Image (cartoon, rainbow, N blue to C red; front, side):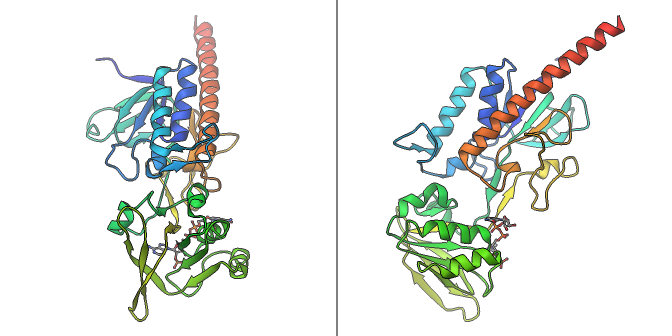
Length: 330
Ligand code: NAP
């Protein structure tokens, strides 16, 4: 059987990966999109939007759209133009080989599962969660990881935010536009956030703090109704009635595959320059795996488009160099 050598492989099927797929498919490059197993929490097909309910800030949907529906539609759009989808977990890549080799889980013993002339990395990032059973059940039903996405649904409601870093205070400040009150719950007495964010939060009358406290349970049937807090010094537990709980204890980019092969910033995100280029020719990165500033579906989709155009131009240059080399050899 001949080796499977692709023009473009896209790792990840969130808004960045699928937008890259739509563009590269329409450029006749027949991309292969590798999407994770549906049961996975870190690389589920469709990415983080599969964990949200209504998305009201993606342009073009005046009535909003459900996150999973948006991803299903993006996937169908990519397939319509000839993108191949494969459910697999990439466990190893060799970016030093030409073409680049990629191994899928269960196929590590033999040669690469697929080789590719260019690679678009869109593996995303995942929010750190508290790890409470009811937290997972109520995700999208009061529990959220994105104030920009979901804050609007909590107008005049009591809200809590967990975390003591810049993300938590940024979320808390944003949520004061909507919520009746915003309680920041932090496991220590000192915030990790920058001084300027702390000053803003302390000045805001809608924000109050629960220090030295952790969330030990999330309450509610169909929707969040409250949380259980434990004071870490005394062990005393209290219940706080809130309708929104925003978990803002950090994100982890899904970059394990590339450690030692690509440049990562101190927080572990891929470093891109000049658009979506990494330091390895033919390897591009887009979406949350290289962006910890904006982290929106629309910015991820935009950078997916950029990666597709960058890959297309790279392949066109490669082809003209190869044609020139062949002519010179004759
Ligand atoms: P972070 O700085 O790592 O803060 C995470 C916070 O969550 C910490 O306060 C930590 O507590 C707490 N935490 C971690 N695990 C926890 C757990 N299991 N239970 C309860 N609390 C837990 O993460 P981040 O706030 O997402 O920021 C990441 C980076 O992005 C930072 O460099 C930040 O400055 C930057 N950022 C900047 C801005 C801005 O400038 N506007 C906005 C967002 C993010 P401890 O403090 O006790 O460790």
